[in-house]
Amino acid sequence: MINDAVREDIRHSVLCWLATVDENGQPNVSPKELFTDHGEDAILIADIASPVSVRNLARNPLVCVSFVDVFRQRGFKIAGRTRLIAPVDPDFAVYGARLQELAGPDFQVRHAIHVAVTRISRIWAPSYALFPDRTVEDQQARAHAAYGVRPASSA
Ligand SMILES: Cc1cc2nc3c(=O)[nH]c(=O)nc-3n(C[C@H](O)[C@H](O)[C@H](O)COP(=O)(O)O)c2cc1C
Image (cartoon, rainbow, N blue to C red; front, side):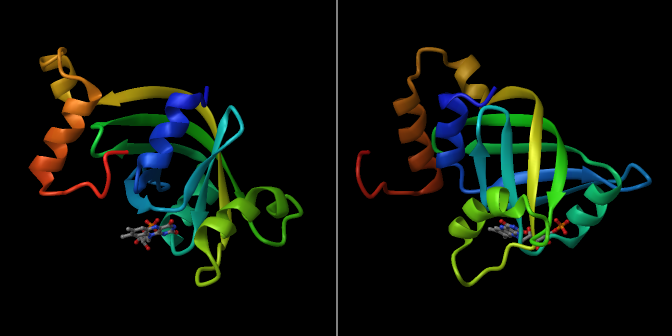
């Protein structure tokens, strides 16, 4: 389920947005910068400072996670089931190490949030459907102009 297209958009997305629900069904959503793919069917998200998400996940492991490459104007939406992995858990060495590497020495990963993917779907900006002749490069150039961003290189 996690293929190269997903990996590419994860790499180019500054943040993912993690949605959980509390015991009353009240949704909670918050941004996470530290996330990565893990194998073919999971992503990992770092809990650095996410007490509400963690509290909700302890009761209800179901989540929805979305991320978009704002310049290419596309991304993915992932539905999944989570497992919270604390540093005392022997599995933390497997799941937490990559996140701690991403976080660097200044931030402590309190939990690795392992999201086993159950469903994944594309997110496209409406302009892809409205203007099908536009290439990804066109989309990117327009997004740079719209957001007032000058790319450092053409890569
Ligand atoms: C740009 C940005 C990146 C963030 N990245 C993370 C992250 O990777 N992990 C984390 O736990 N919190 C991260 N945060 C902080 C949480 O989003 C923030 O503490 C939020 O209030 C947590 O809410 P929650 O308890 O509902 O999850 C980030 C915040 C911002 C603004």
